Image 1 (tube, rainbow, N blue to C red):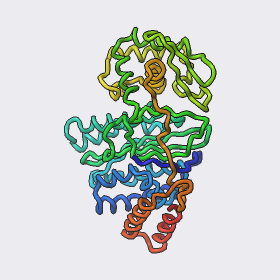
Image 2 (image 1 turned 120 degrees about the vertical axis):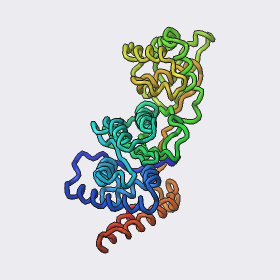
Image 3 (image 1 turned 90 degrees about the vertical axis):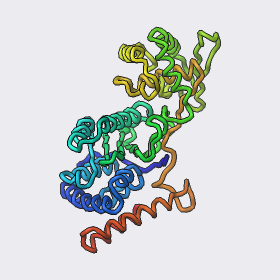
Image 4 (image 1 turned 120 degrees about the horizontal axis):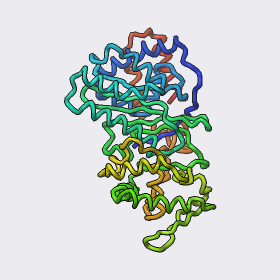
Length: 387
């Protein structure tokens, strides 16, 4: 997985109509050329690369380091191919806010119009919903998802670009998924995560970490044991959730011993799985009850159940960690910066090879457009500045 951090500040203004119209016009030209030269599957795959996506935004003249690049670029691309989707073999669904909730219907509508094989459109809808669920419930990093775009080709290649916001910090985080990179929808599925670091004040719960299979498996086992059994464990947490300090002690009633959750250097109240202090929650009880009736066979099936959200995931993660000793993960999946790296590797090296290859690709594409020479030179200059 490619991980990266870029400085994405939240934008509160609107894109000027003249700029959006220009982005649509140029986006249509760029998309056509890329599909002609590399194919629709490759175009979809490249949208799943955060560096390539950022560079495309630069080509279309939007601010390269602002959160609005994600939402406006996606909207401009969607508008630019409107009416040409079948010819290009490229389809873009969803978008910002309420538009994101229309994604499943848009996918199914395209599936009908394209006469896709039985089950293919439904599978694309499933992948769309799972990506949204993962980035809101399994990666609890303090960013609330407000933008979800699902792009796919006629042959079934797909990419997700979604974005979350942290209003307190005034930052945004972008999550990329690519069907060419994914082997498991819930285990490190991202092709890239671009973000500003959350800082020490926030603790991330990352249930997509490949090293916590035991914790995920325990969640399924707990649900399979039935409602009385899982609620017995939840009640243990509720009785002890008022513990103070950096260490939580919970009595394991089966083994008659204390299990400790140590969070060195952090206040216990910041621990993501106890942010509600596990006070009585009828909704949590209702969701757990529904799960025990469904009895999902895997953690992926558990997460896919309607109603399962961050609170349910946190509750089961804490039961597995504190009572059964199966650690969850608190490692932020966005680890280093591709925007602030230096040639001397301070604070970390820039992936020069990726950047140079991306820029050369766009130079080729720009050279094939019908723009005048002066405009082409301006675009190339912007690409060099964003390197």
